Image (cartoon, rainbow, N blue to C red):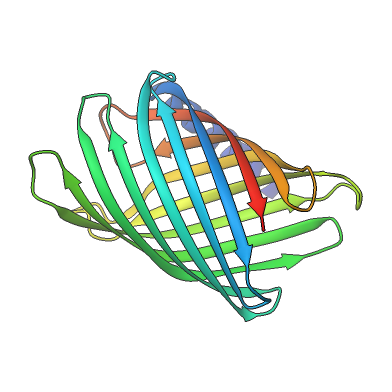
Length: 227
């Protein structure tokens, strides 16, 4: 009987979710990035990234973003401290532009098994946003990300992964909670010890917006360099 009730609840949740998604407008886009990483020793690392995002079915340059990530090892192979700075230029389909200075502080960790790696990060995020012809404002999030990466064989150059990231908005008036979700599915391909590629699909699901909600599917390609 308990199994029947569990199955029945699962069916109800599935059909409810399907009806919710039907009411959401869908669009596609692209994410392209280059990442350069330099490790000074076993305790300190710096990473620089350049991102370009396209949305509105690849017709709009949604954002250009530069990122600098400083990482310090707290517990070797397990726990790290992260400090990041972003500059982000965004352009919406309604012809509105935003310039953002973003700061993140937090912890990340990982645990490896022979063929699987579990990764998690938790970061406080502050966004100083200036909109065209408008006064600047600040917006804060708490971001949590969980990722599982598989390593089919020791000599295999492919590492498939899946990840979910939650954006918990902290100072949006009357709407504190999980603002949106990111779902990533992809694989990295290691060319050699220096170069690797990343191929993924990202689904972005907004939760706060009642009108003009969009389920955006991004196709991503990235190049990563380890010096």
